[in-house]
Picture 1 (cartoon, one colour):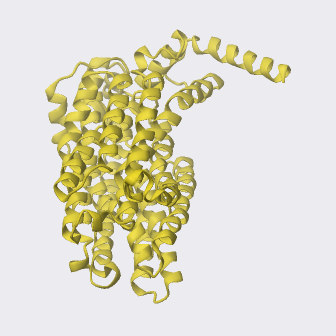
Picture 2 (picture 1 turned 120 degrees about the horizontal axis):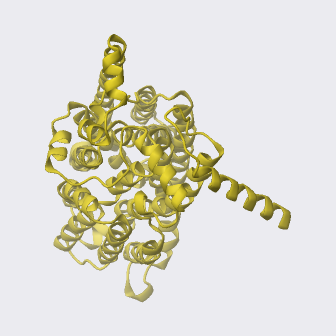
Length: 495
């Protein structure tokens, strides 16, 4: 053990000394010191941020587990009222997402993200204390408002720590927390449901209370662990910070602090590609949230008891997490995005078709697995796309928030459509509409691939046509690259 520790210490010192060595524009950013630096950032960012998102997804979707344990009966909720409570969460999410990322840009993620976690943890506990329909409506709206800033904030934070090629896998790992939340939530709901009657409270109330208290506890820990902006990160040495900033600047995306200007917000809203990323998630979000929120109910509707349905949500979500890992590995290996998003949508569509056409519960349960694997995998890939393809810090922050905001309008539609008086037998009509939304996502992903490829070709042709253009592009200042962002002639899109 001492020898191993000594070898690791020698490797660490060697990597740290190499970080201070000068690098040039031809550097591949795949040296020993770069890999050491990325691993160090991974260990600081990924565990805590993935845990925060797992808790976020758990606290927003555990209402599905609570429903089949008696929430709707105790609060005298009709099916439309239950669906309305789900929709109100996303209404608040849509309203507060872009403002939350603007606040993040002006303040510090080390304070902002843990504070959001603390507040929504308190709100989550309050879900277990509501006694009527109005209380549930109000608390779900507050939950959406307080959770709105986490996901886009983390995606933006990744963009100031990782170069573009490294972000895809990290965002996928982070989003994998959603699938793990589904698996973990099923087991936890089954166990907590056994507390029925403890302290005079129902089992579904304890689900909200205990899971909310867990979130609060983690939020206090997060204040010490969530990092600040990369240019002043204290967990990095001075040579490491310099190297990190160089890596980011070499991608025409300056890592130094960019002064907030409203014109960069306008750049995001007037870029049709940014709207494309938003519409892509709009289609996928319909399926993502309707499936994650209604999975226990869908499985129970196949003929299984409520306690069985809780546990049977675990395998589909576990498969989804594994599917994300495998698909993202291939996506990074072949440096392609759209083709895997399109393929994932087709897998999900097959799953819905099986749900619609199969006559045996076992076969329909297989359909749930396919739908979950395709939906979660597609979302894991598309959610990091604007983070890789939008340059300029403020523009990227707004673009990421726009994607989630307009995507969640699809989520609102999903939770309102999945209601018994519209669904017919076993959610037949909503499943058909989900297929339509996934087909819409396929069309948008295909369009984005076509336009991004053409734009890369146009920039290549422009550089090849004139030596003056090449020289001017290579000599452009940081300010010029910041002003042009991803429209800079040297910037290349990932498609």
